[in-house]
Image (tube, rainbow, N blue to C red; front, side, top):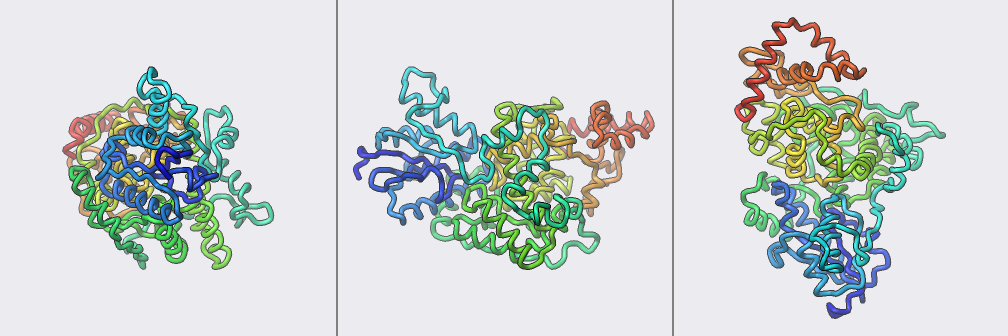
Length: 527
């Protein structure tokens, strides 16, 4: 097939590595070309972790090879050969080369990307249009992403005009629709949610009998990508010595099977617990494969339920995992498309402090932050409580500008795509949208971290001290947050008890607390 004879140019983005993608519906390998673009900007618009870039590029290259093995024509524009600065640049070159009748793609999970692609197409169709206007082009056909279990129109109908959304009710609807963990029309075990059974710490003995994670030895493609990233993104954060993420569907299926067999049985019990050196514990480690679409969420849910039915696994563990995939993941995606673009700039508390430099290095005397950030830099990963109740919670109480912290989360985690990262960070961890889908800010003192981890042992700070020598920033800034927002928090049934504890504090103690907090806030980079 000559380039000029192309009928459809099928655009596949780096997080759309789904062989059953709607973009491939009706594909004719004798007339159509699959286009994949490695764009430098996708690693630089936020200062991306090296492992995040390696994962995307290696998975893309493996996927392109799999499509070629089907006999399909794949136009692959690589950073180290074509060197496109942006997706739009690569698309413009491909359009000039193949002159397609139509470009077909699946709805991106990042509205920035959607706008960039629409803008490139519109500038070609209408050269007098403003560059990057992002208006839909008649040349472009966007298709619904059927990887997800709740189509966006259906989510919008469910959400309606409600000012407040709650995942629990959405989750129940999804359970009923897909008949997951349902017995005779009722939830398995008699209740919908077993979250209260999944919050145990490790105690003084620490974690016991922890299963080892799988090892995915890098093949020649991944090794080439690692060398490329070390060369072209040398100044970026993160370490590649421990890169160990699935980059093909075959590897992702192995990872799923390993989780179901070895970690799901004990997943729930300690899913909120943290411990020095425990990077993965019983966590699934499937989010990157799901978000690249190497795994289908329905097959993941079915695998977990089948294990529960056939092996009698702990219901609380299985339900807790399924809730994350069938409930929270689908819910968060709906919220992203429902609430953008306002979610991108939301700042309920008006926080404006810059992100401390040690978020990029882990070089802080706060051992909890040092452990979580160091783990993130080593692996491109930390689990949900480390993100929510350590790095995120500190961002709230330290009054860090939400968008700076959102960009950090998007940069440093291998599973980060904006549709999932932004609502989780701005909406849940930072309460920047004022509680659109959460009932309270997730804040706590150092006592919470002491209860759920061993991070406080040997720390420079004392978690029970609010002011004076050894005062813990987590604790001081927590009480200062309550003090600053006392009226709002006292009006919320979920946080009123916090303010009652605050009101027991003597006036002179409050003054000492405020002074201590101001000193800490003025020197965040030195903590």
